[in-house]
Image (cartoon, rainbow, N blue to C red; front, side, top):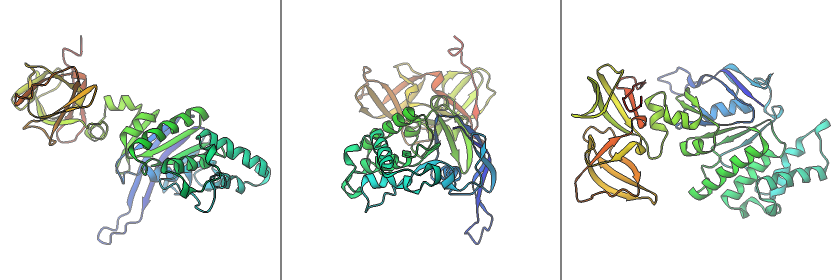
Length: 371
């Protein structure tokens, strides 16, 4: 089921007496979610991602714009008639019911031709439980389950009616790190197995990038960029997107294009083509550094963190816009920790340039890129 959002906008009345203007939570969201894909809505708190999800499921009514499921206009359709499954951040399980009863509950509200017998409901509940691998827990109550198991029950309850669209609102935020990893893998497996169009809301860019077919990066109600996770990571449209995606985050420096070179301070770190002389913000992905004794970029060594297959070199630079510069290099490299200075060459495709004032991306070429 494809989902089409046409110029979707949502405003709320201001609660600030000094500033009575309405607050725009989502502003002119225009996007088509392809059938059978998992789309991640990504952004910081307050960016409008959950409001967008609530409008898709019918819990919030748009101020302007339309929502289509396939060719059907569902903008004014009640939530119970949209055929959506929703999983909330807090699971929202009924504590006095068993796992089986929680999963069956949505089926008990079906009427008319959709009404099921008790045997049919139990069979569908078992199928949903098997999908999330909790069939052995059917007689337990939520208080007897771990956080990860409760989350699986919530997913099974959302899936039991085989919804047209599955909506997940920060579903992993209450889990510890290991359970988050395990559960997000399960969500991806279930989505691929069922082929249900899924919208996944999160502020965690690693989650969104690891399981989404498409990510939508939002800021203050406005869509910043839409694309495949790797494409958005490699080619962010602006500084906000570049900073938001990546772990460790992108390293930022004050720089300038001068002549045919990119300078950080007095050091020409890359030859440049096609950029007029101007002040820039230089972004370098952590994996964009090459440790070499004669590298053009010098930094003051702070420490070395061994991470198994990789090494994180922590350093500082007087022109850095963040406290520390983090460079990820192969563990086969040896860092001379007795030397207070480390030098790096840069991988041109891991260097991103942005206008110092607007934060917009600045395209460039280097001789290495043209080879």
